[in-house]
Amino acid sequence: MRPEPAPGRVLARPYAGFQGVRSATVRLVVTTIIFGVVILGTIVELLRRRRLREKYAVIWLFTGCLVIVLAVFPGGLNRVAGYVGVASGVSLVLFLAVVFLLIIAIHLSWEVSQLEEETRSISEEIALLRMDLERSLPDVPARHEKGHDDPTERSS
Amino acid sequence: MTPPLRVLIVVPAWNEEGSIASVVHELHSTLAGMDVLVVDDGSTDQTALSAREAGAVVARLPYNLGVGGAMRLGFRYAVERDYDTVVQIDADGQHDPAFVPQLLERIAAGADLVIGARFAGVGEYRARGPRRWAMTLLSSVLSHLAGTRLTDTTSGMRASSRPLMNLFSGNYPVEYLGDTVETLAMAARRDFRIEQVPVAMRARTTGQPSNAFGMATVYLGRALVVLLLALIRR
Image (cartoon, rainbow over all chains, first blue to last red; front, side, top):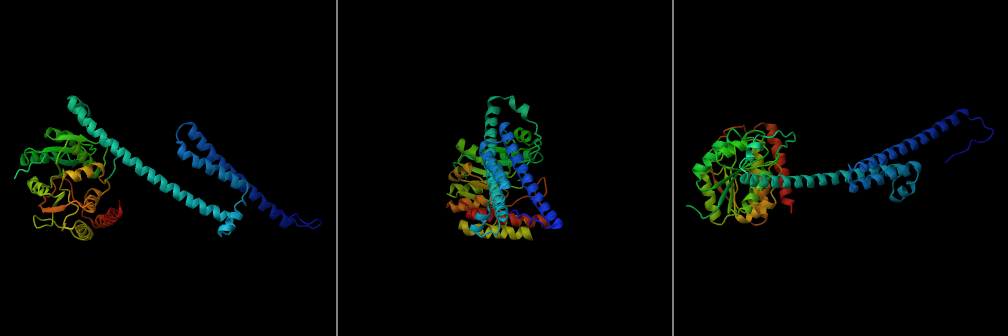
């Protein structure tokens, strides 16, 4: 990958150009590593503050590690790409990234649907319990009678 | 004509303080001996208070779930308290309680789901454009599915038998149109007996029906989605 300039030849301009390409590659590696580290750091911090459940964190930790590995060995996937008929490892990474994000998005929609069903059941349960409560304690309605100002109105 | 049924009238109400009291009063005076449960679907106005003062039992959901959510609560309440039949009546006053006994007669005769239907010869109700097409499409598909002619599949006036209440208390769609269209499909696909009774509906006492062309087109699209989903759902 690193053709040494032939000794004795004066290649001022082409060599300078090659240097530019090379430093660009290095910068890309650094950028990608930083990106991966930021992902890892964010996830770890969220876990540390108990803001993220483990079951969601694992996949992002794994992704962060993968980003760092690929940053250090950008050509690492070229061989795999060749096997599945993709021209370069970079294209393969892009393709897999899109598929991966799509699956994550679908999964999250599914989780949200489940949560909505759960909150719906709970709110029905609350309404039934409140009825029982209002019957056994006659003075309860007065306290709760005002309409509530719920900003999370859903259209139906 | 008094069928030996314990009947619960369920009135889903969302911000209907203007009409709920008169609806409850009318239900009590027209249908003596039937319990009225108003499900306050997270109203921000005085719906619950008005309904209670009018003499209804009121269940209040902590936030707005939509008609489907309110109705499932009604069905759960009815099943827990061992009612034989649930009759759904809208809170805006467009359903005439005088037709409820006809619905109940069909339930007593063995029907599982009885729909109070406009377009069936009584009263006047007109719709045109995309809304009309949507209604025609829904009627033809659901009529075919139910094995009987249904002219008003989105009617919110309906009576359910005990076996159907058991189904609905566990599973009642909450999406828009799901509470009417999808429940029909659910019942039809489980071989429940569906019938309709012609009713006249009144102009709403409050609120405005949406008639704009754009809204009606969206309505058609949503009806299609709900219908397709209802047909492929388990």
